[in-house]
Every structure is written in C-alpha cells, then in structure tokens.
Amino acid sequence: MSSTITTTIAATNGVKVKVDDLPTVRPTAILHRTPWRPPVAVSAQGVYVTLEDGRTIIDGVGGAAVACIGNGHPVVLKALKEQVDKVSYVYNMQLSNEPAEELAQILIDSGKGAFELCGFAAGGSEAMEGVLKLARQYFYEVGQPKRTNFISRQLSYHGNCVATLSLSGNPARRVPYEDILIHEGYHKVSPAYAKRFQKPEETEEQYVERLRQELEDKFLELGPDTVIGFVAETVVGATTGACPAPKGYFKAMKSVCKKYGALFILDEVMSGMGRMGTMHAWESFGDGEAPDMQAVAKGLGGGYASIGAILVNKQIADGIRDKNGFWKHGHTYQAHPLACAASVAVQKVIASENLLENGRVTGEYLASLLRQRLQSPNALAAPYTFDVRGGGSFWAVEFDFTGPDARKVDLRGGKFAMIVQARCLDEGLVIMGMTGGANLEGTVGDHCIFAPAYNVTKEEVEKIVDIFVDSVESVLTESF
Ligand code: PLP
Image (tube, rainbow, N blue to C red; front, side, top):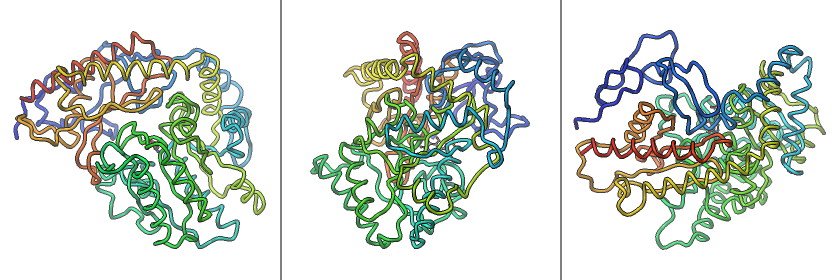
C-alpha cells in the first residue's frame, strides 16, 4: 500500500518526506530511540519547549507523563541549587542524606498508614526490578522459599530491563528480546479492559468475576504456595493508554492474593504521584485498595531528576526487619541527594499550589474537548474514535481502523498514532502515539496519550486539543 501522507517529523531539515520513506537515518553520536534524530530542545519553561530551529512548542504529555509541574519551576531550581552546594553525592551504603530522609517520610505519610518503609531507585524500571527482588526477599526471609512465581497481565508494561520486561505483557517492546526474556516464574492473566474484552452478554460484575476466577485458577495451577504476588498497573499506561480497570476489579484481585498469602503489588510508575488526581492512583482508581508494595517514579521527581521509589506496608517491613533488617539490593545512584532534593521540592509545589485539584479540573476539560471535537456526530474523526478515557491529568484517545475502511493508506497497528504524533510535532505539540491494545497480541490498536503538567492552564489545554484535532483530521484527509 502506498502512502501519500508526508511529514517532516522535524528531523529532515524541514523537507517533507513520505511516511513510507521512514525511517530516515540521521548521523548522530547518540543511539537514539527513534530511527531519526529527534529535534533538540534548547530551553523549556512550564509546558513550553523551544527547539533548535527557534520554534516554541507545547508539551501535552510531560515527555512520558513525567513533567508534572512543567519545566523551570523556581522552587525546584532553588532547591537543586542549594543541594548542589550542600551535598551533591554520597553513596547510600555508607551515608544517608537529608533530602532522602525527608522524601521517604513524605512518601510514607502520603499513604495515610498504608506504607511503612520506602526504598529508592533511579527510575521506573529500576523501582519495579527492586519490587520484584524485595518481594522475593520477603518470602525468603519469612521462611517461604518455595514462592518464586509472579503473575502479571497481558497488555501491561512494567519496565524495559530483562526482569521487568519479562513481567510485561507488551508484545511490541518484547521484540526482539523474547528469547532472552525470563519465562520461568513470569505468568500472565488477562488484562482488565472492559471496552475491548468484556463479553456483550456479561455485566461489569460478571466480567470482574471472570477475571477474579482466572487469577484464582492461575494460583491453583501454579500451586498457591509458590506465588509471590500479583502485579498490575493501577491504570494501564503505555500498552493500552490511560485505561482504568472496571469497578471492583482490584478488590477482587486483592482478595485472591490475600486468600493464598501472596502479595498484591501495584505499579504506579506512570499513574501515581498525582497523575490520576489523587496522590496514589489506587485511592481513586483501585477501589481504594492499598497494595502491599508499590512502585512510583515519573511524577515523583517531575523530570527534574531521575528517581523512582518503592513503598511497602508493615507486613513486609516487619518480615524484613525481623530477620536481617536490610534490603539486599541496591544501586550506585539510589537515594541520590540531588534527585531527592528535587523530588521533595516537586512534592511541596504540588501541595502548596493545590495542583491535584488543578490537574483534575484541567484534565476533565481536556477530556470534554477531545470528546466534543472527535466524537460529535459530524466530527471527521468520529467513525474512527473508539474511546476517550482516563482520569485526573491522564487521558488517551484510542482510534480503531479494524472495520471496513476505504482508505488508501493502511493506518492500523500503531501507524496512525505514530503519524499523528509526528504531525503534531510538526505543528507544535508533543503527544505520545502508541501501538497496541485492540487485540491480545498487541499488534492492532492506536492510541494517543495526553499527560499534561498538573499546573497546565485551560487556555493551554485548548491549544493542545486544537493542534491535536487538526493533526488527526489532516492525516485522515490525506489518507483517502
Ligand atoms: N512501569 C510503568 C507502568 C511505566 O509506565 C514505565 C515507563 O513508562 C515503567 C514501569 C518503566 O519506567 P522507566 O521508563 O522510568 O524505566
């Protein structure tokens, strides 16, 4: 199929290229994550980023749902500068540091009794890797060494390292690593994605019961006393795009874990730290069910530094403390003073500027504009807009081209989302276009993710939606 869609993807010196001509390889010293060299950002303030070509564009997704208070916040910059002058680095196996101690306390207090201990990491994958190892360490210490199995879900993403990718049901990211991923000990059950996978004859309650039964059957198949825990993203991010589970799902899944003495583990790397409008996503999108262990990352440091954290409840804390009393795991940059100082400042800004409230209000506004512009009966994109979903400051539009379609260009399988992402960049907007979600193999489905800063304004939201909808409509029109 030949394409008539062109885009500059801002990487070809302004020369429009045919989408089918991609990838355009550009000589550069960096091993980029795209086949082309992305445009270089030279300065950034709030949700605006200025590029090397002098254009100032707006970021509608905080990079990768990270920059939750935007760039250049003076409170964070001041905290970072002060910390550089005090202690820039100490190694966590020899010395602790003030911002790390303060941040751990902020995180534990944020759980309102749910958490007792906090460990640090340098990002989301590292935090999730730490979760897997600490969960195993817990059962080892309390005399249940037979527990070696994790159960996670298809259409999930928990990180890009070998263990966390083994845990992830993200087919696109597993290629070409499948044969070096770990299969023993990593088991999958169905995703909780009602709009695609709830059967027409099922009520929501029956759908949840089917998923609960599937998890229980998996426990029984593996041997309940061999399961370490069930791991899930509270709101699925990368794989199906801001996709919350049906009501009652987490309560049901946690009940299975409790019945068999296993751990209920939530990955809130993307959906946590205020992204869903509450500090922890499980407070509003997880039936209020606190996990035994949780990972957070992106919104913790808001992109001012590379950081992740692990939160554990009293049961796990006691299990570890009663035995050897320490975490047999660590990295060089764990509890880095600069990262912790930046994160303390980010969390103080969120609280003092009431940004969770602003994130909820502007997020709802974003969703209402997207629905209005994409799903109203005479909207150009209406026949292809499958869903607009999410919550807080985290939303996604899922497009569907699986039905009969007279387009000349085959837009399925992530292609449309990627082209729209490139077109948005040309037009001055950063969003995230992703593949997958519409089938369990992850080969069909297109979604575009929005995760603006919690302090975005309504005018900025309007700008984001305007550029996005214009880009969607122009790509659709060109595909005829
Ligand atoms: N877990 C979830 C739910 C994520 O969304 C991500 C990243 O997108 C990760 C883990 C991995 O985090 P990082 O990219 O910081 O390693």
